[in-house]
Length: 602
Image (tube, rainbow, N blue to C red; front, side, top):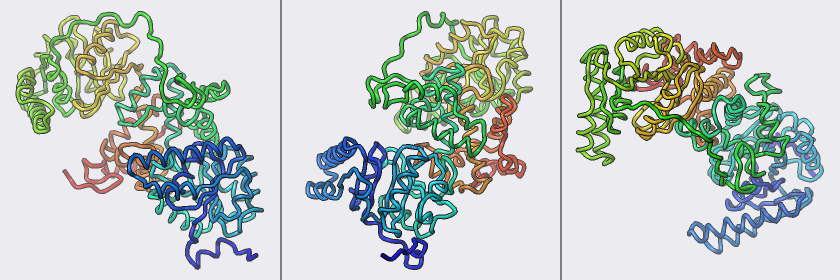
């Protein structure tokens, strides 16, 4: 036999990967096998468990039958796909493969055993890909007789649908092997992203830190599982909340990934939350077990069993008919529109009449767009505008039952305003701040009635975003808390409860993720384009982290990062130096024309 090294393939171009063996026919392995067979590859499916091999075969039969029913596949094509997929229980069956993809459990011992066995089975020119998302590809490759042919090929679940594939090179990997699997990924209709070898790679490296923080937040009883998940779905537009996603991934798998990430990074943010270890040890590993953070109607099923309703509930809130808005910026006009559209009388008070009038003009423009898109009628537009009274004095807020401040995110500015509101507003009026990162209690202590003060963090744009974080301080009265919930329901917003600490729910989970993305670029691990693609295509995020940073504003992001670091004093939350340098240089994102990317000046 010619014992040619895969390194020599680079001179002749990448090899054609016509026959692919998939070792491990669990959910991911089955999905990869289906994808390959439907794309015209000869697929050798291998699993030591005959039942797993049979399930994989049945899954392919069922998925292709559905494709025929939906006219996405012809009957003859279906027969050809099924004929290309054969299953075996011995690794020796991989001998003819040009590429072997192992998708076995996340264990060095298991994966090393598979790779060593393949050394005696496949040709030296065959490429071996590990599907790990947590273990070191380099460590696995080092045990192979031909480490230059070993790389990582990380598909995302479900493999047939998710477009991202991370192609992971070690320092030993042949460029020809990388080129070959990259070409294969493109042929499969995927978006390959080339990354280096570190636990989690790009997508999971960012995703699992965020999931871990959400688990810690739940464990500390800061917020309920439902509120944490709703916050990230409604506040960030994510397809699934973090705790529900942990249940889907598998809590044991998440614990393994985080353990490997922490061993490499020594970052406390990657140290698995104790609750993950406790749930995994108890066998409560998520959907596959029928119970994890949530309880499911059966193992493997997506349907969540309804949580028991808490006894008692909130007391009655205070009556709110007139809502005052203190401020005249984008958020102030958006919140004013929300309340006026819901039937409340609104007093929109700016520091000057012209500022208040400008805010109402923004409301008019917003409502005009809604009329043009046939979301509301012209009559509804006119009625909404008629309920808004723009004024240039905070004195006019005296008759409001609820006053919401929406001024600059600076504590001195907010405290000064609350001091004014304390003197102006009637006894019994609820005073709310829209701060996203400052301590609500500091605003409350600027008044003689701290029990009447609460946080109501709306998200921008307020008319469109459904989430409101209701932030109760240690001084907030029960009926004030109840009032905030009642008015949120009245304007059709989803209220979530959280305590008075930096970032509340959304920003406390979102901004460390953004900061870690900046660190990846700073360390030259991946480019902003590749990271954005990884999170959009692999995580289902509506925007990549660098797209989002440029929209939010790098200066705003830095201020929130600093607030989180100051509050929690965790070294892992320290703002990335690259973010600080860009802000110092005036590169603030879209609003300045340049951030992580160039933008047209507005």
